[in-house]
Image (cartoon, rainbow, N blue to C red):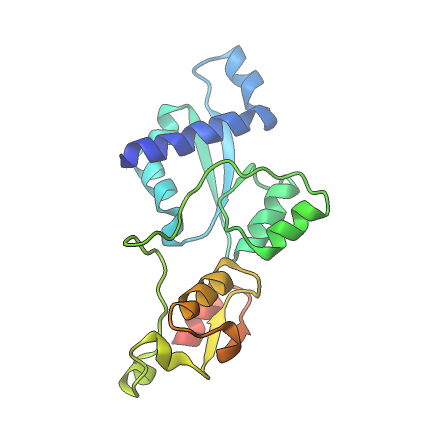
Length: 189
């Protein structure tokens, strides 16, 4: 099942190559590798891509992946739209919707991660000090400051959804946009 999902992702990349000039190169030499720059984050939602890279699934499809690492979702969308990367593995964010609404040509071709009952890919972390001081369940974060990468990010959305499960809203916490993943991690330290 995992390989099917990962191969599906590889096939989506192959379809995208038609817009990246990859088709012409493969037509001339079917064994030639097509270079694809892939913008992504170091998050569990990118696990199918990490596995595909590690298992050689892209190489089996004659795709040579140039991994470009980013520290927030929005810059991936911008890099993809401006052709700085061929493919962006990013979240569905407010900025992505705004780019599409302003006429930017982007296409969503595959799901690389999602929340589903019984298969969570999100967690809310607190410092050891806060945990030891009684913040042990979601309801305990009411009135607390919560660091996220950016307002309108998938983290912002997921936090809102988590709070809803306990009858809370985003108004019940103070959201602190920190700009990038490394800043969120530093804030926890």
